[in-house]
Amino acid sequence: MEWPGRSAASLGYCSCHVCSLVSRPQADEYPPRCPRCGTRLHLRYPDSLQRCWALLIASYILYIPANLMTMMETGTLISYRKDTIMSGVIHLWQSGNPGIAVIVFVASILVPLFKLLVLTLLLLSVRRGSTWKIRTRIQLYRIVELVGRWSMLDIFVLTILAALVQIQTMATVRAGTASIAFGMVVVLTMFAAMVFDPRLMWDPLRKRTGHE
Image 1 (cartoon, rainbow, N blue to C red):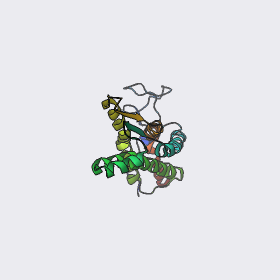
Image 2: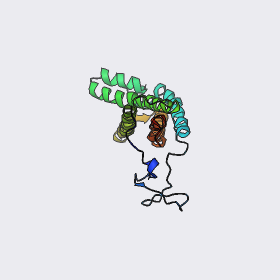
Image 3: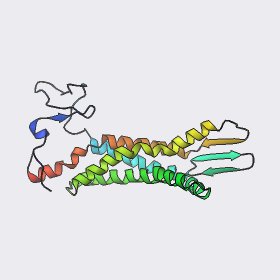
């Protein structure tokens, strides 16, 4: 892949990571700040990779109890059951709700795992200085930012159910311990995507082609 042209950084321009304004810092201003919102400007986010790795490792650790521990406890006068995310999906499928089961499976299992794997791929590619399919990796990063918030579907459903069930003597719906771990996984992966600087993926290509 060839370098598409001169970079904004080589021309002295810098993008604000808060309001996205592209501006040229003043030579006599230190530290340089965005003329629109006053945020401190950086050519690259400080310690982007280290922060992203820390958040990602914490997400991997919490992903295990989030899937193995109880997500929801439901009880009536005649029955009581505890469900993990996967057992809840299976129960929904067997109860005649395949559509809801598929939505919960995709939003609560596939999407968080997809985010973890994609962020790991991006971090490793930057660490190795890879120039492999940069545009594809940029698109993957944008997808992670776009769909990340929908990973909270399980928590939303559980909250709605708990609010709707008002007759405590006949039925109860309670959040399990996995809901805390799951919520933290979603939040941490969202933060990891936020602190990751996608411009780092272009730096190896710029250096290889000799453009500054």
